[in-house]
Length: 125
Image (cartoon, rainbow, N blue to C red; front, side):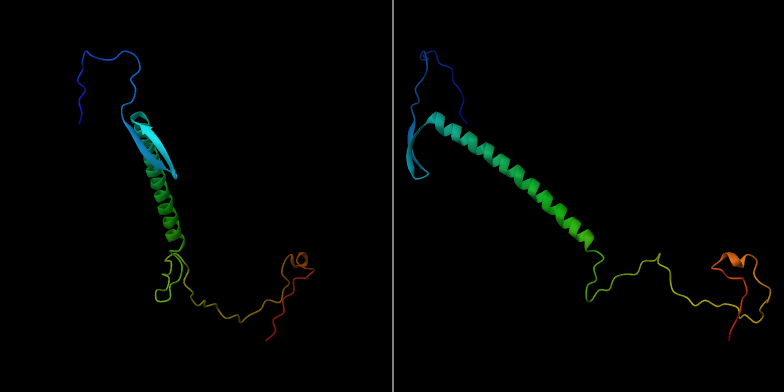
């Protein structure tokens, strides 16, 4: 690491760059001085940090998409692994009803209101 050592023999006015380098960029030869080179390094560092941020955001987006796909496909039937039955679903049972042996012949009250019926009930066996 370099350390600045102040001196009393500073030139007055603008200092001309002392370092000049020939560089081939985009199939063209260019001459860069020390200011241009350090500016290029600074720009490159900014681009790298922006690329790292973008890559991190893409990684988070892919992780979110994969988590969503896992959640959506958790109930999909796999050949060797049938889906588990939910415990809250009703289980089928048999219903036992009493046998009807006696029929009341009197008409039902208000039967004429429903579909033009007089309320009479007929059981055929």
